[in-house]
Image 1 (cartoon, helix red, strand yellow):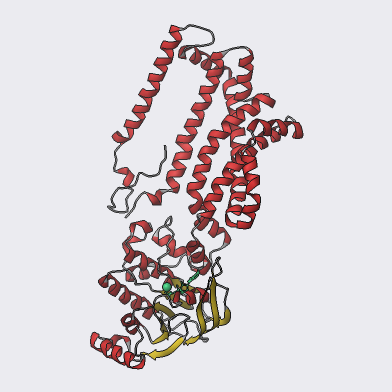
Image 2 (cartoon, chains in turn red, yellow):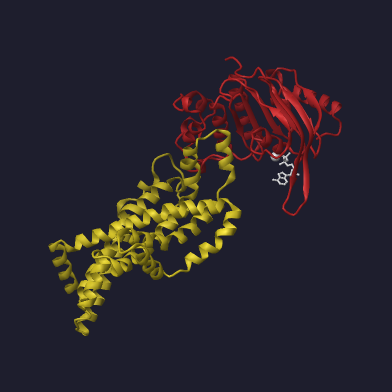
Length: 246
Length: 275
Ligand SMILES: Nc1ncnc2c1ncn2[C@@H]1O[C@H](COP(=O)(O)OP(=O)(O)O)[C@@H](O)[C@H]1O
Ligand SMILES: [Mg+2]
């Protein structure tokens, strides 16, 4: 399929984001954070825990408007964004299928989801309630929901944390499969370098709080050639370019 | 008697797990309740025989009165009138109380300002509200139903305010990202989260409302169970008083069993099959 949407890239230019607690303590989470993600590109936002990655995504998702600066989302197609959070955030009182369909725009509500559910291994679980799913399966349902909406921009916030190694690996492969079927401009947050090297076209490396961009690491090697050996070579050259990071 | 908390079953397939406990096990509670009620009747009958008095009729006499009133149609007329008032007051109290409660629960400033009002209204005796409503608005149906609703609204407000405070912002954020419409937010995000609170408010609501409705009828209506009880009080006819009371209690229990519990089971079906 053609890459959908997005003559415009994702352009982020956040001057500052400061949290102020009720006790008057203020924490500057982001400072002069600017980067771009080209259309149809899978980018990773890599940084240590607590550096402000989730904060950045929440701003881009429009959930937090208390910041100075600006950003521009890719356009085209539905003009919609989709997100997979750290928590799957499925509605516990709706089945897996209802959860996915409710997120769809009105004109797509009745669309055929067999292919997507099949690919993600959820075909037999469409009528399950989220409480009946393991965390790995719930994450898959959250992925299904995000991809079903055919978004112009996809945000992922550490979607593979707190899974065992094998489940995480399987889920990464599934993510690549559904993403390759319809390459969408994507920004994924992670603090796992190997994961970033496996999945992304470019890695945006963030400094510890307040987050700003340390540099960009482009991964030009096509994904199908990223064998364990190739990944360890990439790791080495990453550490040469960013000594002391992660 | 809550329908919730029957969980703990393990997951087999998508089939309804409740069908697995056969009809035999479902009969045991029914049997227990029947025997228990029969025991109470027996005790009552023995006591009435031991102290025979017009002021303390046995179950047989009450049953006779019940049959007589049913045959004349009076029973159903008055039960219907009371039931209508209970339903109307319930609907008004739940809607008004929920709207106010949700608003207070989601706006801290408004809550701080109106909290004393809520406490004030919670503590006004039902009788005062009824008397004032009749004085201000006349001895009519609107005043009667309004007075009952006003008595119940503060309770609903407090419960629903609690529910609104417990709303999980993550679901609202998910709905914002995926652009749910306003009606969808109410239906799929708001109401399911508030359901336990709505159920709690309903439950205590119906019990409270029908007791207050009887007082309203006694003070200013010319039909309904409360009016009949007042009438038979003046005639010192205890058998008739008990007949009307028990008939109405029975109606309320049937509503609980056939309406409230099935609705609640349906609304909480997703809770009963944990992974
Ligand atoms: N709502 C909040 N109020 C105050 N401080 C916050 C809030 N959310 C995040 N922070 C602070 O901002 C910093 C960045 O947080 P976050 O974006 O969640 O980091 P991460 O990169 O791990 O996702 C952290 O130090 C955190 O304590
Ligand atoms: Mg985070």
